[in-house]
Amino acid sequence: VFPVFCRTTTFEDATAIFEREGRRIEDLCGLFTPGQFMRRVTVPPMAGIEDSSRTWSAALLVEHVVTVGDAVSKVLVFLSCGQVPPFAPDVTGLRPKGKGGVNVMDDFRRLLAMYTDLVKNDLPRPVDAPRYAHPAFGELDIHQWHCLSAMHLRLHRRHLFMIRKNLKDEPPAAKTPPVFADTAIESPPATGG
Image (cartoon, rainbow, N blue to C red; front, side):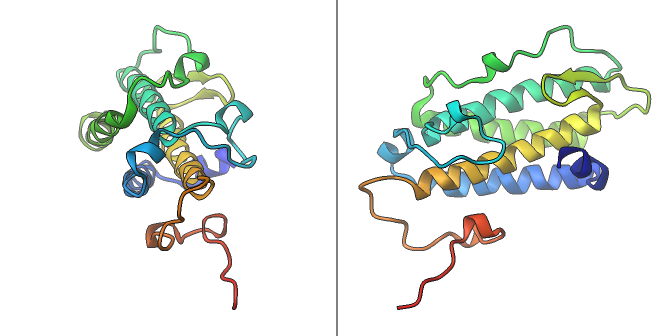
């Protein structure tokens, strides 16, 4: 899926996807009470979500998205300057620590503004930019890293939806927010009655 996404998605399209998914995550987070936002929820297995991530709270998920977004931003800056980042990718360092609480949304909003500004205004894209290895996807160029960032937000927006859907002993949301009606996984079929 990832190689096809990179081949069929322009840099500008990846930016638009990143912005749209960021807004969707923010909108969905607004449906949680503070207690729900902090509560760990087990979601069913999902493609792209490790088993260890299936018991996260919304707060942990948002913290992870911010940590990954900040790391990818640094990679993009180095590659845009024609340099290979001087640090090794550390997947374990990207796991949430649970220290942000509900305030992690401030970090998320900062990330959205910073990342979007970076890719729209501040990021030269030299044709001979080096590649940098991702632990799972191998050597990626600046375009592929940006596509990965957009796909990462999309994946975790779906993950967040499943966290919301699987909250126990809480009344369900009045209705599924229209912004999530774009895929079958997020819009369960209506039942007659």
